[in-house]
Length: 75
Image (cartoon, rainbow, N blue to C red; front, side):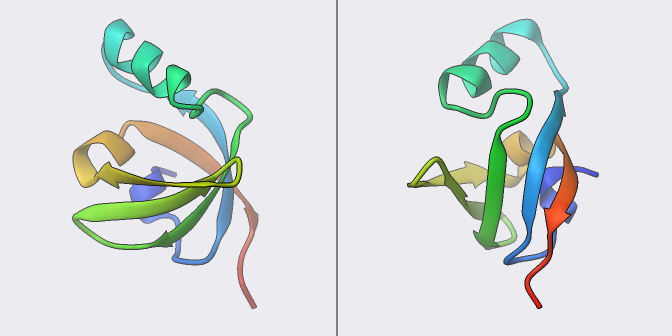
């Protein structure tokens, strides 16, 4: 599923980055590489994510290029 589809409070593992090579390289530089764990804190048009002890805001457009698998959903 796309990061935009991950429920708020859930943790996902990055499976794949989709898009142009330069854009994917930039996401990897920011820490969104394959196998990274991301917690989606909230948001719709701008998503707030927790990644390696850092909160990062992503546009909906950028987050749509990050494919994740659900690891944990908040109970």
